[in-house]
Length: 328
Ligand SMILES: [Fe+2]
Ligand SMILES: [Fe+2]
Image (cartoon, rainbow, N blue to C red; front, top):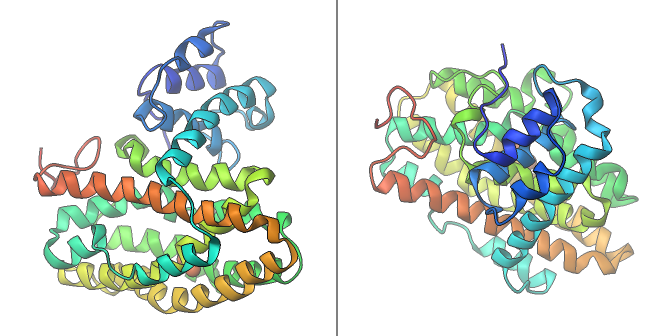
């Protein structure tokens, strides 16, 4: 049974109040003043708004999805977030250079390298909890893009998506493989179960996908975000499969990452040639936004990685509330 998450400050409290009852006038602008767009409250508020376009929220009427008042509030959250992302991404290189940079970024370390080399089982379990906010709905956020690009790029995007949803075998949909991996590692695989434990840096990863996916104006960035996942995933997936195996996962507990070693090596090629090259051939003006999407994804993922490593190296839980086997 899914529960409504607990608020983490005035912004998420206002969204929760609005979608369940309705807040006093003016409370929103006041709440937004001077808040940190990377902060817990801001990220949860945005996550709640986006979830109304996705699986919905328990106990919330689906009609809230297109409520103009709530959309105006969402806009108020998106603007500072996008500005912060642009800031974090820094100067964006030309597209070919940005793609080349990702290809050569093979193994800069990050959580997958840490987990492979010295991770403990509680850290691997924490990693899955963080990633569950995206992977349990893989690859729904990327599919907002589908009606926004056309021709060969659209067809190739669909080819990749076909694999993400199990290539004709629903039981092999990547979201389900992730759920089975969670169960193998003794975690609760129900959608949204760990939302309250997941901190802002992990929510920001999903919020970025939804921000890019839901705005046609940002469709180039959505292509870049999608490409960044497919291009960088394969080596990281191999490290995570090895880490989980070493930490006692069974076959079900490594299948998700083993599947991605193979699949994303192919997807990388498809996305580069079939989506990026095809799209920029017909819409060259999108190249800059695609490069921004790549850089933005790297920046937001980088913040998430830094959060994990900083906590783990200090022997602390990276979650808002540790799992039973994590440090207290
Ligand atoms: Fe996948
Ligand atoms: Fe993929």
